[in-house]
Length: 345
Ligand code: SAH
Ligand code: SF4
Image (cartoon, rainbow, N blue to C red; front, side, top):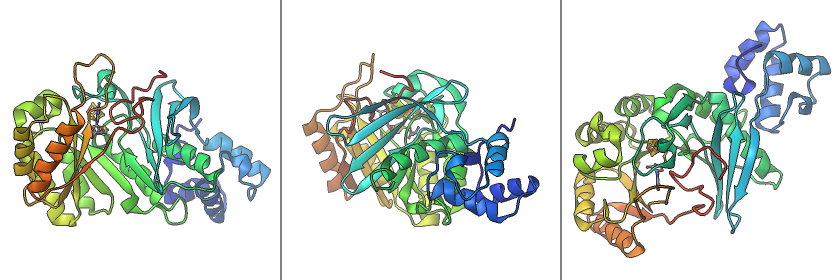
């Protein structure tokens, strides 16, 4: 049995695989098109292939679709969260959000997360394993098929589900290359966003790629003491070097960075906290997203009240920093940022 699924292969990898099987090269394009344009859920649905070849492929290169364990939809039907069971029994979650004309999917990159941020449900359950590129791609295909049945397609993919993308760098970048391929799924690089807690070696590597993929940094605080309390990895990657890597990224790519701040009542939401953030980001090509904390079970942290969020936003805006307030989406079905646990609720 092959330990790879079709979804783990880039187009060139698929071509090589078929060559090794003794198949003609145009077969690769038929399979690629069937999978990423027609969104066929199995080889049997790729009718341009002979029955013999379909059976051979199912044996040699399984199409590892995810099993849906459960799906929840928000009352307004604009957020849908699915819990998937992976082939080894582990479970992960992904979320589809329908806002305005955007059809955004939020994917997981790991089963659990090793970082353990104080306010995040994923971090509470610890780390189990990395996802493969194929397991990331499969989350996207699941929702893409769902949307296609209504004549719609995914417009954005955010790597903001369970896990830390830059601790699973290769699989994350490979999944983006697969989904970006112009002869297949063809989602533009600018439609992807990777969110990192601030893994400096990952930011540096990503800077070298000089890619159009968007980068978001989970900042949460403008001073090291508070940030370490909220985001323990700050001890290894403190704000000084982190900001230096962010500035190097903008210098090289000329792309605008996003900073995310989850505002926690009485913890990181004061005017003084806002000043520190403004000072840190001064002169940098960036945008700040403020999210009142999404509640998670057994946590003492509470979301900042709306007035406090608005006051924080005003401090940043007055300091010349582009700022948006994002109100909780999908919070009631625990599909909001940091609420994914990989369990049914
Ligand atoms: N590990 C990556 C990506 C996954 S978390 C990261 O930390 O960036 C995605 C986003 O959700 C991050 O910005 C994270 O800080 C935020 N987040 C985590 N828990 C949250 C919560 N309870 N409320 C609001 N945002 C939260
Ligand atoms: Fe991991 Fe991101 Fe959650 Fe922190 S916020 S525990 S890095 S998933």
